[in-house]
Image (cartoon, rainbow, N blue to C red; front, side):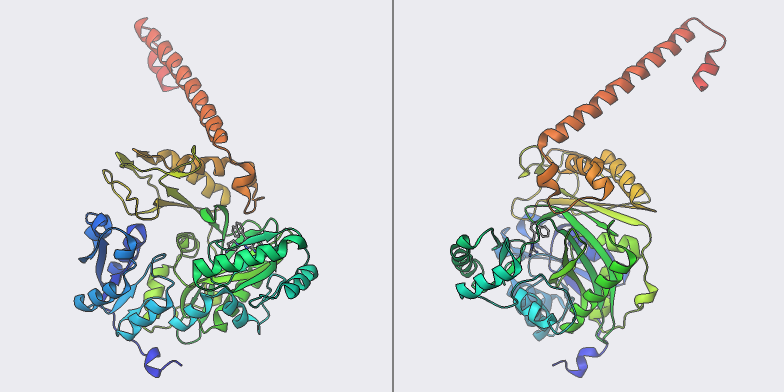
Length: 502
Ligand code: MV4
């Protein structure tokens, strides 16, 4: 039950950002823009990080490992109280989707800048989420919407929907606990393994069964909802380019959605949010099959890594909306007020070696020069000379470009990658070039198997060789031209000036 005070406007003068790196810094930029004081928390590994230097105030959480720092809920809440913070922004990852943390924050009299903990709890369970949206007309993957243990029932459902089927853990996430079953003989053993794996990994052995969508696209819809029942979607993000459930490239709009389909999916996403009285920013995840059928998968109850592409096409600062909603303001726009302006693409720049199975690449940013330009945004949390700590996610930065259309956004991206100078460790920048030059990406005809289907390290090396050959040809031509000019100058020809001007 929401108490009346829940809807009252509340002051927020000081916000503690319970995160690190680029997202902490990105949140604090908006906090400052809104005239609010920012408090950084940091681990011993992050003492000199940009997010600490940027913040108005900063306080150490403890040793480097996340369990002793950014995941220490009690410490974060007690520090927030000590520092006089009246809001906590969790960013993404760490405690951001932890309903117990959100509840503890609220019970400490501090505003959690995110959804209500009840909605977080529902959406944190795939089965509870399905149960919640069931009474609305939202398409779901054929299968069973409840925990299943009875093997005979499982066989019946699998035969109804047809093989292959996918066993999923209700508490799973990011592809963990999923199993593809090709035929009936494998169903029983795979179910047993899935249940025991889910029990040991998540402390919840509930599993369910869905038809396996062979080559889906991952399309998600951004929503924002205030505490007065206004819910608006901010269009889609196409996130099909992933490796091992880690997104690498995201864009908005998707090149496959028609205006009709976009409206249908947007309306469905709004209904998903309404079904659990969702407030604040959230993302509704859909799978789309090769016949353009879409199915609700789950809802992410946080600000997502890839939120900048939505910001660039809508002009809306999502963190500002989150803060305004959390302090009890009404949304300043409705569905008819928002529209898509151009096209935006994001490349995640990881400290990983794309030539060596994307293994983490440790080292120091000996050289770190960002690309710059009107249509280029770099969200990062490191500076030249810093090393990337091994304790956390290896993402160095997000490179986002905008264009009047998709082709322009891609061209700007390719130039921005060329202008991005990182030395001292391997990054996924060359992999980005591979994606943005690939016919399947450029034509928009790709699905979640893009990397498995097309990528081998040799492919980038080939491309780099081609680029090197072209570069050396250009250099050769340049030397020849220069020599010609020098010859002319040496010959004291009278027309050398004109030749130089050509
Ligand atoms: C699926 C699927 C095919 N069929 N469900 C992976 C993570 C989780 N959020 C959902 N996932 C999938 N669910 C059915 N019924 C394929 C995936 C999947 C996937 C989804 C989105 C993006 C990348 C993916 C990579 C592999 C599998």
